[in-house]
Length: 350
Image (cartoon, rainbow, N blue to C red):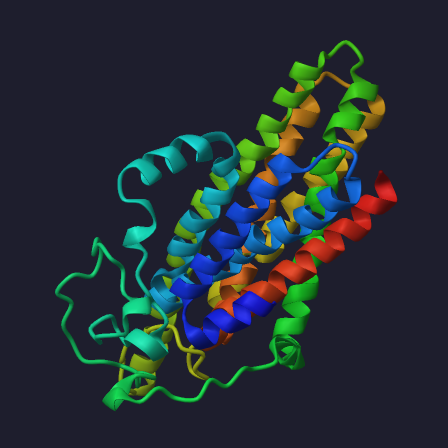
């Protein structure tokens, strides 16, 4: 909540750097923590998650900066696939980046600072090595905080004030419920499979996680395609209605306008996916309880992961559409609700 709000005010780049610094220092501290200092382990783990978890909200903020609503679903779906693959391929990619480009290529994206990317900013907001956006020209759509050499006074907004918006509060509650069920399934795989299928070795139990992980990855990529397709489909319906009424068919680029039903574009298919999500969760529980062939729960696991990520991505993209100027703060609220609800349900099951 803190870093997401700061990123919406002072920029993404400096907060990214701060989070990565916190993460790096705590990793070193954890490596040096003696086994007798369990309290220190807990403290450093909390600090470590402060640095790492915040980057999820920052990434969503960058997507809100650089994308319009008609393409935001695809961006968000592709972005969400990263955290799902990171535990497996992160060390390889991290080593490659550190050995080549490193951190020097990260640009600033916050519109109030860089506009559409054509504004010259202070050194702290400029990458040392330009990789994307070199030579960008065009009309600046928003006023920069550095325009005329004057930096506007920092005005911090209370991130919890977002919850006054009933639409966002309801969608966050819905997201938290779906997330809690998904994480409950994931967190109990080891225990349930070891009890239901005692012939499995620890290695084989670990491999069972690939099913739900594969479903999440496939669903993340599919969600982007589905969301962008739905946006275009609703846009076509709106254009036909305007044409029939003799109004201008000016194309909307994703702002929350009264004449563009953004909630329809994002949420129309969610009831269908929720039917499969609920049905696969019930089927998974039945398979474990009856100890049917192991292929049964694994198939249901895949469907749970696939449908869960589509539902979560659609609703998360929707809240960014509602408040694109506070995309990091909104994403931080999503993270708090998701993590809190998941932790509460898992604590009751374990």
